[in-house]
Length: 181
Ligand code: IMP
Ligand code: MG
Image (cartoon, rainbow, N blue to C red; front, side, top):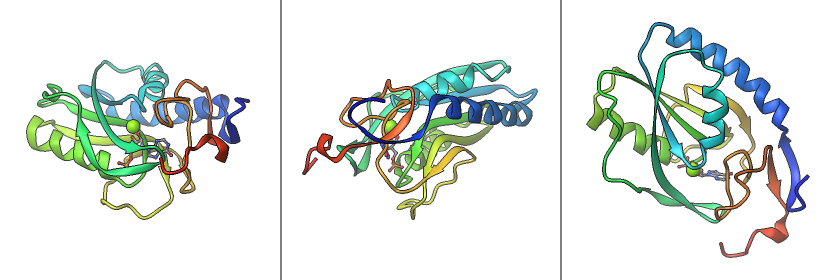
């Protein structure tokens, strides 16, 4: 276990078994459809890589980079790092992100894709969903795991840019979280 971790919520084997189930569900829902995945970087990177390799469907992959977190708290605004959106007109879009927290990120991206890209359909898929009241109401159509309202790292999720490459999901020891961050 990484020395900065306090508890482990999900080991890699647990995550990958859950992805087998999610992939089976997606394959049955999207059979015969033109799927375009829109991956939210960088948090959704590992989740999408492992999930999409389990999806035996023809699909295209696009990505968007946004940021909303500062330290361990949501900043309240969602910033797009690029000026263009993916070309998904008439396609069935699956928006993939790492975690549903306040709901702002998924809601803002979802609305922009619907307003500006004219997809045939749009569903959302997250690895984690926090048990808490959303600040913005948004539906996650596919969810890996529900977790308590605590800050987690690993398997794509970061704290100030670190820990994304841990193969598991866990919480950080307090001494590694800078106060006031
Ligand atoms: P929301 O916009 O508040 O729903 O937050 C979504 C984004 O915040 C995610 O894409 C993550 O980048 C980040 N985030 C939310 N909770 C956590 C966490 O517990 N650990 C790391 N990043 C998080
Ligand atoms: Mg993120």
